Amino acid sequence: MYTPGAADVAKLRNITGAGMMDCKKALVEAEGDFDKAIEVLRKKGQKVAANRADRESTEGAVIAKVNADRTKGTIIALNCETDFVAKNDDFVKLAHELAELAVGKTKDEFLATEFGGSTVAEKLIEQTGVIGEKIEVGTFESIEGPFLGAYIHAGNKIAAITSLSADVDGAGDAAKAVSMQVAAMNPIALDETMVSQETIDRELDIEREILTKEGKPANIIDNILKGKMQRFYKDNTLVHQSFIKDSGLSVAEYVKSVNDDLKVVGFIRVSLA
Image (tube, rainbow, N blue to C red; front, side):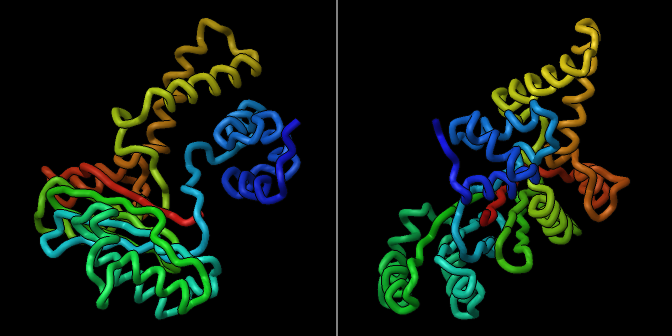
């Protein structure tokens, strides 16, 4: 029988907020599959942050950059082994310099780019020797759009870039504000049309099982589920989320208040777990 290690239990607890023993039991039942373990916790009535888990990573700095005309952007995670190195000014400066080079390139193109008399890939190997820790580019995400704005959260652990539909007055502030929203609230998709069918089916299955266990009549469960899914989209898709700077507005309504024709058309987000 699978026996989860303390690190896996702690990781699931960090993702979900559930108790240590509940997390351990869920991992055992799911045989170590974190997504299935989250489902197990939810089906047992645990209030967990399902679908909100970030990519697993080590320490490092996450940096977002956009090009001069704000149509291309990239987020990189420059990874290291300890938080001590991640907070070092020279390491953070290096992360910013590399992120600037990465904009408009694929990861392979970026690693082959000339940097300080060598390639980026060679520079990372060099820095590994200088610092004494493994230094590498982990997550590498890019986005293109009509108008981009970036945000890096304090501490360089989370970064986001948002794409708006046009370069209009106020678009710079709006793109940054929505990128802050993305960083803070970690939406799973832009809107309900962008949520995967797998996620929808999983959510419906979980909620149906909960309602059945609560004794809700079968003939009204489908109607209840419609309301549950509307709430799910409101909480988890960017344009429908309550705007963090004004809870009286959705994100879509906030952007529309800047310019009547302005819309959010895309986003990327990277976080160190």
